[in-house]
Image 1 (tube, rainbow, N blue to C red):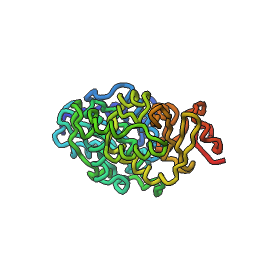
Image 2 (cartoon, rainbow, N blue to C red):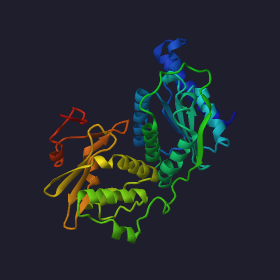
Image 3 (cartoon, one colour):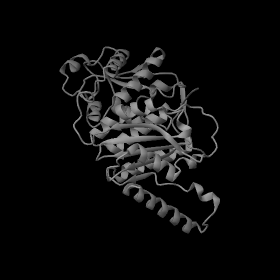
Image 4 (cartoon, helix red, strand yellow):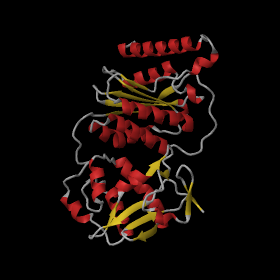
Length: 349
């Protein structure tokens, strides 16, 4: 047994003994599902804020998707990361709190520059090895390369949640084994400059093409080209000045752009444009919860996309469904025929 596994087992034993002592019920059957630590950051890659956000996301995944998540970073090189991932899942019975083998382990080995996502038995039909590998490469890698490990973990987990089918079968029976080795391992450089695949801040040609447009709909069509070409220049003037400032500190990945483009292409025929003075809203059906309205402002040069205001007024839940954070913004003129519940979700009147 490796030293890494010995440290893992020691922490698990300590956690179980402390929990049993506090509850005063050693040997009770119900304690077979004691909670595991959601984050074990031996490599000290995560800030306390990032840990808290991942813990909240994990709690939401357990409640809404019946998935038990653990994020583990290693202080020492693992050697065989695939074998260690299986051992961790089996030793901790990761997934038991879901009622079956629905565990997800994200194992990060920063010294060997590799990441492994281990998928529990009862999630193998939901998260294919190909899907896991694609998310690791397209979503996680650019964040890790920018030394934004916490953001990369969150963004990847959110994408996994979005990929999961809305309706699933009843929980499977508890298993003796919790993992069969499904998942994927990818090379993952941490804290290295991003290459042109992920950021294109010096593309003068793009800055000449993606400029304010004569109509709101033309601006959104132009934005689709930006997504399709994976352009990530925050200084494009098709964005408002506040948006350009907002995007300067915002990392966008190919996976995020692909998903947004896919949703826009699917729903674009439903686009409705509402204008009032120098503001515009492009909205879709209230039942299309994965496609938020787009907010725009008109400058002297033409219509610009206002993602800065969108980030302040539009939120997304664990299912990637949009809602208004508040209704006291100047774009509400476009929603007079809709009503919003106490949580900001839209409905037609």
